[in-house]
Image (cartoon, rainbow, N blue to C red; front, side, top):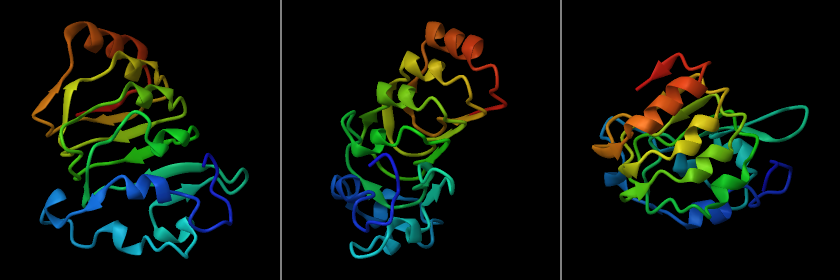
Length: 166
């Protein structure tokens, strides 16, 4: 699961099955959900949501923004097996009041994380501050998401590459 190879159906089948596709889970201006291209008998690299490193084959980008995903994002999600991600966009979905998992802190290569408008709740885990390569972090429009003062101080202190914080 850590690499995106030539085997169809191996990429995100377990991840995909943990969510329902619901048109009310994304904003109205999300015209064409990316999930429409998720076909079991096709290579996930053709889905338009995965960016792979051509040299290593690792998935380095995952764009699931506006994908009409609805369901809980658990800390044991297969998403967290993609340890080489540099860019991750989960914006404009409905993760059904899931907490932001501390597992996001294991994406040590992550430079861009977008969780905008995705119905996350609770406290942003302090492990996010371990992502020292982070350039852009968007947590906006999650009305019940909190950053405690100590966690914010850690973010400000450790994320020295950060240029955008929403």
